[in-house]
Image: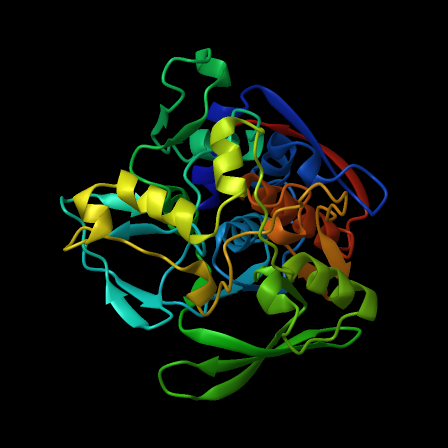
Amino acid sequence: MSFPGRRAWIKGALGGLAAFSVVGSGGSSLHDRPERGHSILGGGVVRPLAGRQVLVLGAGIAGLSAAYLLEAAGASVTLVEARNRIGGRNFSVRDGMLLPHPDGTRIARLPTAGRVEAGPTIFLPSHRHALFYAQAFEVAREPIGGGAYSREAEPWRPIAGMAAFATAFHDRLAAKTLFMQEVRRIDQSAERADVTLQDRLTGHVQAVSADFAVVTFPVALLASLPMAITDEFRHFLRMRSAQTISLVSDGSRTASRFEGSSLATPLFRSVRGMGREGRGPRGGDVVVDWQAQPYSRGAFVQDGGTGRRGPAAIGQGRLLFAGDGVSDLPGWQEGALRSAHAAVSQIFSHAPVQALHVPVQAL
């Protein structure tokens, strides 16, 4: 990967003269506008994190985008992932894939060649970070509003599947990706972040350290992971990882039939509506139980209208946290992208450059 290549696509996305600033905490930051982050990191004039080492834990969308931004800022990045793939809950299931399940591993069987999106399926028009990356990386998109909206207001998705969005980040990384490495413990000192890894194949345990660690695990995992964080933040994680099930209805006659019946009744009606394949599937069924996925332990965080919104990123000394679960937009990949930008912005506040304004001529 070459940085001149990044300048080329920044020119296409931004054009003209881009001005940027790297400021300390309390000033403007990367996550305010996606194009600001790219003009800072892609211009090649200043690399404020040159010589710094950063561990990025988790190769979901938050981890991939954080690694991309950090690397472009000059940091030496190591990406750590417990699975044998990238994407996290961004997961396009294809025929023949092995899927963990509560009663064992199952093989995905699709009736025709294709895919099933087991995780996120759409982006909204308001997801400007996602749109910016898709345009910059030339990820082919298609609207899915069915003509009900104007083209600018339509939800969209990558034509090649959601996995293409994650792959676009990973393909542009020079960082080494350590797959099948489970994080067992996270510690920190005033100068370093220390992480204990265990190889899932060999059982080998090793300790790695860096100037910073960006932790992007789902909150259900963070809440129980041994790590050096404050009690207040651990309480926040536990509150966010609590599981609730709710039924929301519009009060219609159909809704009242569901609300006033046993659990078996609506399930029976739903299965009956699926036809013969739903009542007795003989193939073509794909079930992804996110609770059974060992490095997800649940689908996604939903705020639930409680008003307990997570900060865009939370810094705990040398540890920075990112992901949709700690973002101000939980449950969406856009939230993961925002939090990654914010985490990198917080690392910038530790960099030697505290207040720098440099004009960058797009090449």
